[in-house]
Image (tube, rainbow over all chains, first blue to last red; front, side):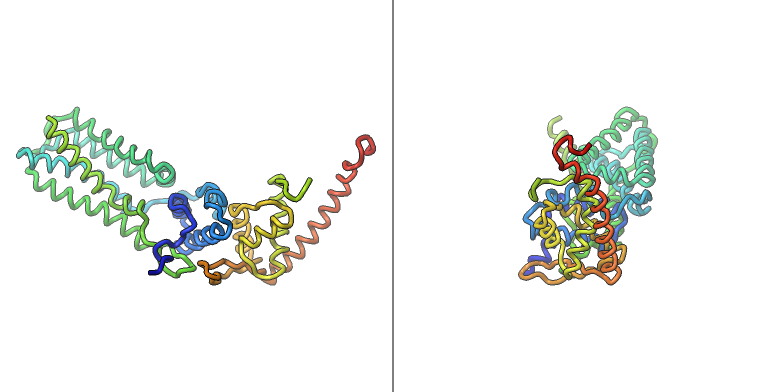
Length: 240
Length: 119
């Protein structure tokens, strides 16, 4: 077994590495440039016995020291933003479609649903226009960003809870299938964007980095959140 | 003062380029070896976060060229080698530094005299 292919930079802490890659991506460095810089860090740490944090400091600051401050705002690809919007809309549809299925009730679209959809569209537009500070914050505060994702869900639930006037009634199948399609799109659209572009390449191995655990989690964030919401619904149902 | 002390970071920033170019005059070498030679020379520990951005700037300026070479039982090392333009730059910076330090020493050496002797 080739250990190098599984751990391309064994002397670099995974968290440092993930943050460095994210910062380099935000600076629009190519996969080859990022891989070269990471291999350099890894080789130095292997020789010196220092951690990447000790020898190179904060990964974001080190990234900026390599590329300088271009001052150019980074724009997310439209399909990535569309994937995020699809994921949020799927979270509005799937858990409630499952709930309607189990309860044998209709899937009712309320005024609160429409308000939540407008919030989703507004957030997607904000992420599209100001992606750099948003993404940098997510990368630097992974634990807080997970909490923020749940906070966002609560923000979406509040108008749904308060504005219950029905606007439209449907069977559960249509919203459920639409939600699954949106969930699939939430994975596929950003994934294509990430995988097709420019993978990180280690100049020593000549190979390509496999996606990191954080990358996998990010790619499947919305399906994971949908399962959590369905699970929470099930728990509440057994408690009531 | 002694070779083990931590020099002011602004001094090190000023002198790092000329010292690194001087080390590269001895032939191709890799980052950690450069850091070790700088430390052995008495400049203290130069962190990778300081050294590699400088090497990157030298590469961008065309003063060094880089090559990954297989390591001896390790994953490989990135070697830096002076280009002809880098050789000229190393000599120019060394000459400038010599003149600069002559000027500053002419000014500051008198401070080494016993107090009151400088007036």
